[in-house]
Length: 175
Image (cartoon, rainbow, N blue to C red; front, side, top):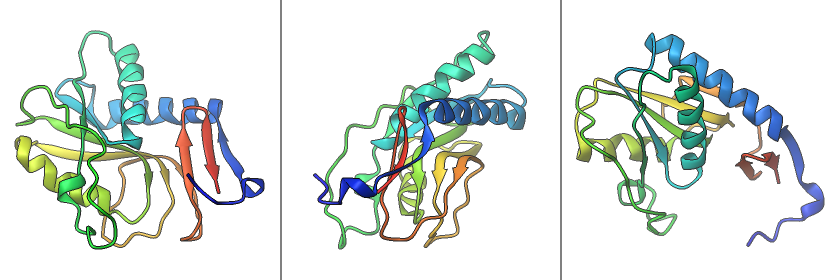
């Protein structure tokens, strides 16, 4: 549990803002890919899973003729910062079928240093060879340590390195 002072919690996106951002991202995904056929959505454990589920629901409403496979990816054993943080599997990876030839949309709640995305790209190799990989994030807070840039962003949110950004369907806060 965080020992941060709760009086310094600042809400930057409301639940309605989150819903609108996810709807916009879903429409951008459809536009960029000329539909949703051939896509698969993978939420990065843990924070990206709820975002991926929400996006998949919106995509299904946009194009009910096509199913969008939805899965989750745990990158714990592919991280390069295990000396700094312990390896603790967040949850199991759940990928239905092969990723070969599909366009994969990796989904995370908050993009910070880029290390989780780097680990996700490595982990994808265990499940096939996608034709393309795109990245969708609800919040991009900067501070990249690796040359990673999202394709779809709900909100660019400049922060200091020591702030904590918490994203849920109920809103996004900075602590």
